[in-house]
Length: 139
Image (cartoon, rainbow, N blue to C red; front, side, top):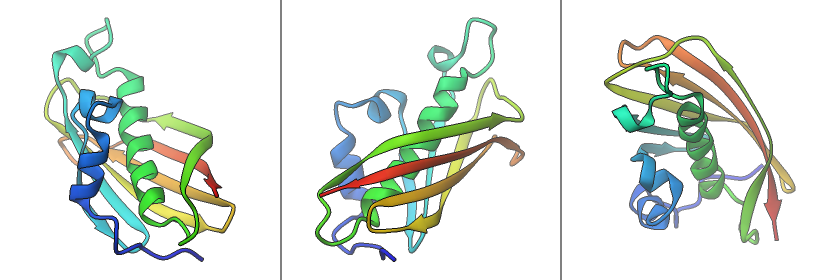
């Protein structure tokens, strides 16, 4: 089972995201511990769907980023990267404003794959989405 790598910090993750989708969306990692990572983003009008509610892709991007950053921070020592091979989301609510949060938790930290679950909550603390992804570890 992979362990949290000491060479991955929140600052390193923020540096890595410059010029990419998570930066464009405003994703911020806020906590990193063994088997978990928390990230958030502030809802803005340009992240809404035409119906006036938060676009589902914004929620998926936050959850996938949280899981991806967690995966990076838990890669086996000789691994060089990862990529997502499967993801699934269930949407239970939405938001039009405020800050939403994703908490990613390790389900399986293997040598060839990792599985992560994320729960996305709205500004009111209620669950907005449940998310699961599988990552393939690259050597």
